[in-house]
Length: 418
Image (cartoon, rainbow, N blue to C red; front, top):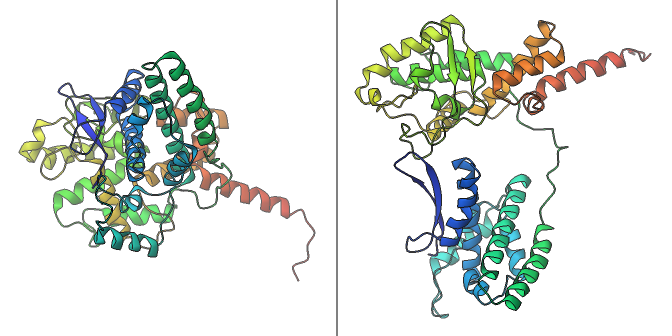
């Protein structure tokens, strides 16, 4: 099977990067050169890996069409519009669905792979769901950027006349390709992710309490650790990567505070996918009861695992290794099963939405001016001074206030009740 796979690599100095592995295991040299431009610009390792997965999709689709992109460029020729249309079409779908149609290297035309035919029939029968519009747009943009990079790279190796012809041909074709980037609507707000209501939040906290009979986990360490995870996410509104990036030294010994710090390519983080902080460094204040619970977890649970003492990370698995991002996702998947009927799909990021909506409600109760409240929120969430990110996280609060105001307006209408 023809497979181009985006692989993560970790260097001895802790730096993370990604490479596109071709069939046989060797990396695609041109992709390595292209991704190096992202490294030089200081882009995050997860961003680079996301681009690499898009280029894996590009190469796999061209392989299915039996198009040798590099050989084409060496001849001074570019992809045709129909071939680019194929890439734009593939950008609409989940990679798992497209991968079922992968083919092997060119072989005898009379050889029929019955397994592949059955898999294609399965795809045809089952409903193939498209990715969201933003993902589709991002895929086409990065594909176009890479193809433009390649055309420029190979044009420089050709005779002047042939190189200029390749540049012109590629520019015209990519203009048509980029025209297929879908518009990402900012108007679709109904059904967007929101935080938990106060009732659902209380229900969740009660469920995950270590002594709860309905707690979905059996082992005492896992119960206490997962309870602490939920409490910290609700108390601070931090992202899962920020939580898993916390180190014991980030806790203040004499104050109920913790520091959220950016540690890109931390050598002391053994995880292949590093838990990273996307926002600015900041200090978060915690209630004494919460910080005491953190230290109690360290003393009574974490430090009793011998392997955990080798690592600085606060949150660890029951084998002592720093907890992974996928483990956080698994925890919330288990909570969704244990806590059915919630009006929102419970994820770690819902905790961030919940914190922001509670922050808005508390700011209103305290009578804070809007400008001051937003400055305080941006500081607590690690956003830049005049960030507009709050609008994304406070839809439920904003929607409720809008409904209240609208009803107040309607009270002015003289409408008989009978």
